[in-house]
Structures are given as structure tokens and as C-alpha cells.
Image (cartoon, rainbow, N blue to C red; front, side, top):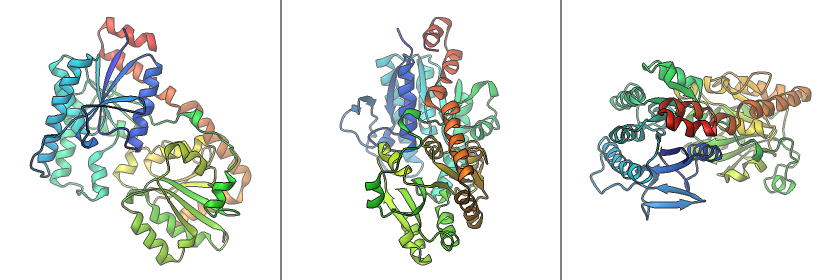
Length: 411
């Protein structure tokens, strides 16, 4: 017999997102540990043709949402009721040892309720402060009734879960501030599959020519275009850099709600020919684009979300042996050691960003040291194998002695 873990997810393949990529990495490593993993998605996945679906070799239990009146507040309750019912059905079918819901709280509370009925322990993985993300997306305001209600539900789930995992120290401190004992909180940090990234790979000449980047100095960004990413700050730095670097290009990989506004900003500033909006790139193709970029820039603005949460993309860039320049928000400071694995600049300051880029472009010895340091950091501290191994102790603490052996056989 092997350890059986039921993961409750907001969404999964075939949808692509940072959330999905983290999930898949966790599942792959848990399978390598010899555990059986089962996967259930909430109605947020969207309507599915079948109750069970296999995508790219992974089986998912889907959750349907019954037709009903769509109203803010009512929708969330309907989602939780449907998710609670489906979790109960799947628990009876697969008989897991551990129920492991992942953010948001719309997964956590139904999972806790269903697991309690069946006498099962719950590990809740809080991946983000979802109410703070909603503030940035414009769907609520800080301190609003919706904001406070979401925060209260999150706190309730955190306190009721048997163990809590999260992705970084910023969120660990936030969780502790809500009354959760430190002994019940474990950081399972974001990481990368180091084998999929090759440091020092030569740029693809055909792709470089196709994008019009021959003989160009290239700054780049990969990710979603949300306001908190601060891409407007990056664009504002371009006119400051062009006099010394007339061949400068900015390569933006991804998309999102800010895309139209960013294109309009580039046009208004007269720099549109220096900014390339490539669109979304398949995850397995990202490394080819990284190799074209001299410096990956992550100019996140300072707000609760960015101060608390670490992103994934800078780790990918470091794994690929690329230079990284990032704003000095808390989430970046957990990943980037200034002068060792990358450089940090003052958040929200285009001139500070321009100075950081100028410094890197002027000193090849520093650049080589940073590339080496970044790659080493990922190899030694941020591989998925090392990160996911942290679940061994988390699960073992929850289970009775006979079942602990199932965990220990892997650990």
C-alpha cells in the first residue's frame, strides 16, 4: 500500500497558469516519492463534458455547478456547496489518507467539512492572499465588506486545517499573524525543474531574426500583465536608456488585462518600435525566448500582494542562467540576493530601474558572477525535488503510526 493524497484544486490542465505549473510540479515529485495522488477541480475549472477527465496523462475529477441565479456572494456559496458534495463522492471512491486543498478558500472550507465527516486530516495550502489580488484586479477595494468577508473566511480555514503549507516566508508570517501556531505552518517554496533549463545555451538565431532582435540589447519580462507587475515602470525606463543604448528592445512574453493600456503607453511615449508584445508562449518554449534576453526585468509595484508573495518566473530566469533585475518588494527579496544572484532597484521608480540596467550592461564580470550565483541558488535551494520533500514531515505529523510508515518509506 502507498500513501494516497487527494488534492483539491481551483483549476488544472488543460488551462495554463502559474497555479497549474506549481500543481503539476508537486504532483510529479509526489509520484516520484511513491505516493498515489488524486486530483479534483472546483467548478472554477469551467463546465466539463465528463465527471472524470484525463489530460496529458493526468486524471482529474471535475465538479459541475448546477444552474442557478448568478449573484455576487450567491455564486461563491454555490461553488462551495458543489465542491463539498463532489469531494465527499471522491473520498468514498479513492479512500485517501490525506485531503490537501489548495487556494482559494472556496476549496479549503468544503474540503475541511468533507474530510471531517470521514475522519481524515486536512493540509491547506495557501498560495496567495486572494483578497489582496482582488484589490489589484479591481474587483474589490481594501477594507470593503467583500474584502473583509474573504479575509475572515480565509482565517477560519487556516485555523481549522490540521496543517497549513504556503509558498514563502511573507505568507508564513501573515498566516501566523492570524492565530495559527508556527508548528502548524510549513513553507513549500516555489521552485523549478532544473533539468528543463540549460544555463549558457546559445540563442536561437532563427528566432532572434524572426523577432527582429539581431544586434539588439534585449530586456525582457515573462508573465501575466497585471497592474501590480509594474510593466508601465519598465516602459517608462526605456526613454531613459535609449540615448546610451539605441538598439534597445523590450520583449514582453505573456498577456493579460493591462496589455491594451501598455501598448497605448508605448505608442504615446514614441517607443512602440522598441517594444515587442509576443503574446503567450508555451511553457516548454519559454527557455528559447529567455536565451534571447540580456536582462529579465521584474518591476513589481509595492502592495500587500507583492510584499507577501513570491513569483515563479525569476526562478526560471535564474535557472536558465539569465541576468535578473527586480524591484525591491518583499516577494523579490526572498528570491534575489542583491549583488549575488541578481540586482534589486526601488519599486515604482523608472530611473532606479534604468540605473540598475545600465550598471549590469556596463560590467561583464559582475554579470557573469550574477548568472553563476543565480543558477547555483536554484540548483541548491529551489529545485522541486528539494521543495516537495518538505511534505514528508507535514503528512507524517498528521497520520497515525501505521500510516506514518507509508510516508517514511518515501522520505
